[in-house]
Length: 313
Image (cartoon, rainbow, N blue to C red):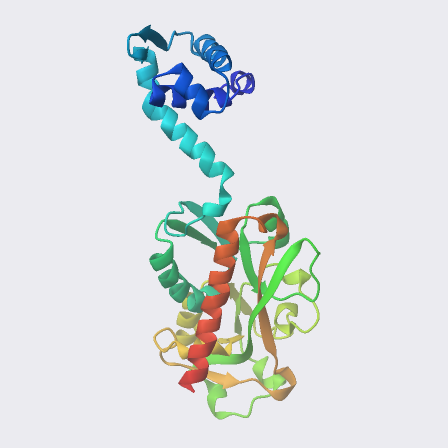
């Protein structure tokens, strides 16, 4: 692409050329564009200079396009349609949208959210490509740079003003172990819990999380070693084969397929708390129709999950 050449061209000339091709008459083209016939003739002269071709020759029936002009018809319509689309964001249609949106989401959140969200998108935006990243550090910086479009993360106490933040849901934590684990038949205490090795699920920007998000501050660290992974199904397989335990959101116990032969134990009272998750976007997307639409789709999907949970009992 020759940007210097493009910078010297008045793109209005392409509109005039399109009208001339449709009308086949300088006078009718001038009338349609609400300019005088001499001005239209001058525009045709500029077009001939730009394309280095006469483009039209006079005949008894008006003006006839040259082979060069005829060869431009299909591409000219396509280019003008694309430019019009760039300028008219108000005509956004999820059904017609083609593009990629990148979402940072931990696997244990995506495990529950992505299936119903994907079902919604398959129906309403079949050409949208949703790309998810399960390990992404410095997420706020990536959102600002455009490397991420959205992030679903453990809520922080403070966010800079250039970010939009919407709380999605909170979940209590539970201790997941195999059914025959020694802890199953015991009264749990924090000291007893720390006697067993733990699987720790990866948490983005762990060092930046403060306040009530105790999970991110390592207060559940084991005296017997830790295995960190971002893969939830791997974590569950480790639990089935060992005495490791996993402290994670209690809602995962609802997936009976993934938690086969695994039980969820209530945390000791001194360690009991909930983790809040929020949806984050940078304000650079405030005027993007696709971002605003998908923002609401994510929120509605979470609300539908919460409604389903309440009605299940």
